[in-house]
Image 1: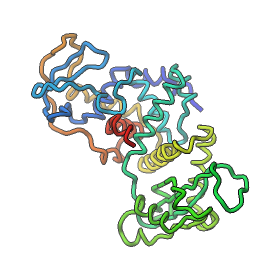
Image 2: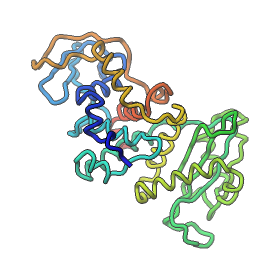
Image 3: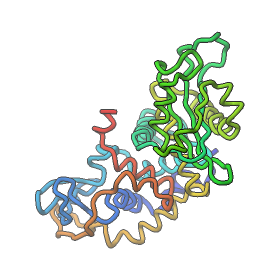
Image 4: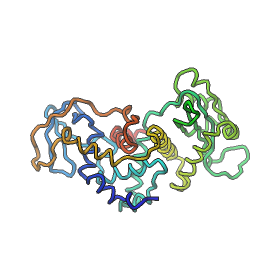
Length: 341
């Protein structure tokens, strides 16, 4: 349920407007200042005759913008609406579907779906987080629950799920993966499927690799009490908020759920602090974001700090909000990455 103070208009007032949202994405892409994506030079001219300013490198004349070379390249949707969508998608309690997002942003369903699909795709491309220490892991099946005998139907999809436990026995990290049917024997996970899940989501130490991955859903329910409630919540969210998903898109939705769950766990489940993040960035942006107020096509050159584009590894920092982690993921991957995936 979206509260009145969570509407797009309220978010725009709280965040400081479109310029503050632009500065937010600028900081996500160049946290220490502009760097030419072609030669790495730090000086640029500003071409401010377009909706989004262009930065022209003084060394190689390469022109780039905040969104060029990212998943947001070519978008005609205001960046504030993208950031609002990321805020809703990053809520620890639940995400948002395209129908609701379209109504909140006053855009078409097609636009809202494309925005959410790009964000989820970027999250699915992030390197999987590794489980370590004591682990509960097993197999579950998503889809129709009608008794179909001993064979999986086309509408049933096997999911490998695992959580790592902290010193107090509480879940602190989650991993989920759609299991290819070649690694299943009816409702049981083959040894090859268990090896695939270990290789993808387990750390390399011997103690972690020695954890048992239960090959059937019945054993998983009996032996993995902490795990069952988590994957039931994910299924409830997919069926409740999204009204089910196409099998082709299921890995993206699982990636969204696991990313949000792990990010909330790292942040102490304190929820989304997007307003604080924007205020902090806006206060410091004057020293690193070039002045875009000039109407000339070639403004004066600007110097910025020497640091390369943010790396994917920095996305997992526990000190930043869930929404900023999502924004950094979208800044880290280009449209070519999405097309190749």
